[in-house]
Figure 1 (cartoon, rainbow, N blue to C red):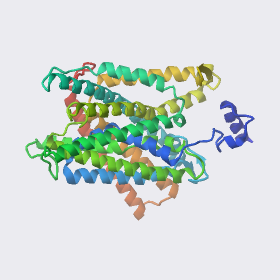
Figure 2: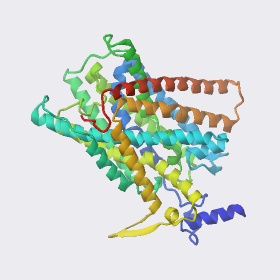
Figure 3: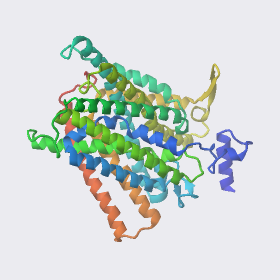
Length: 476
């Protein structure tokens, strides 16, 4: 009886009482329409983003052997643990059990206690950091277009320096409007467009690198690390930062459950999500290897933080401009993909805390021409504040590679390794001190140590960067 009342209240909230129940899923929400391909698009939009631009630099720090091995190893580990996570969407049975709509819910259901609070802090902190990183990277791409055009007109030694701040503010204004997209289920069109853009600029970077190599202009490369002339301490720090960059580029666990929550109920969501994981990670790995290897072969030890921005390729200027425009369009969509779980989490809490408040719950219909949509005052106010805070923080700390490494260190171990492994152990009731338990805990320990080392290296890099830049005064 209690369950029937809850389901009826849910249906009233979404305005579907009296409609055919076939329009609803088993949790009373409108039928989900996501497929393996839309899920793959969300994955690619997340992973083939800012991180892929730094992989050639990461390869230059690690060398051919460690660099290629790191990309392949981290991709395989991500696939394995992502599949473990896919089985945690429903509990206790991965096919017929109760839905866990968010990562936090999955952790709470499977691990109990207060672990879900820690998970939420890490997840939402990382997603907020990703939004900051996308804001920085978008501004760098726009400034790169201006600089490359300036170099084309005035020469490579021309006075071409521009502030990033106006472009961060411009992106913030755009994202304020896009953030009113109500939920993750309405993002498919934007995510597919962003995924197409990511393929575009990755292929342009690969093509420019291959052209440089064919022309015989490629630089010297090394099997392990960079040249011996580099200071040993700096070499170690940079190698750790590089591993953090690769980890961040491979990481999408923080939105994996939200993606799975957009899938159709049949076939089972965990099976479809595992297919999407395979498609997304295989495509991701191919793009990563092409971008990293070709960029390193073209620039050698002098590989810049991004081969498509102002310190990378400059000719043909129109093609580099096009690639940077693709980056901007991709990151505009990726910003929403990483922000929607935060928006949804806060708004769910607000609805539970103030269920009778018109500010929080009331939807106002609006029409512009033939377009009809709804807006909510709480959603409008809080999401606008979020975008403004992200923009201000991005203007205050515009550090690229070090920021990517820190985000990777913060997210990869707990979200990609620890929680999926611990939930799998709990669901499967794996006994302690068995071989499988030791193997999973060894995986946990290894990546915890790697994450700590990478975090230390990225903090070291950020401290050094703070001596070079002044907040809100960054120019390229």
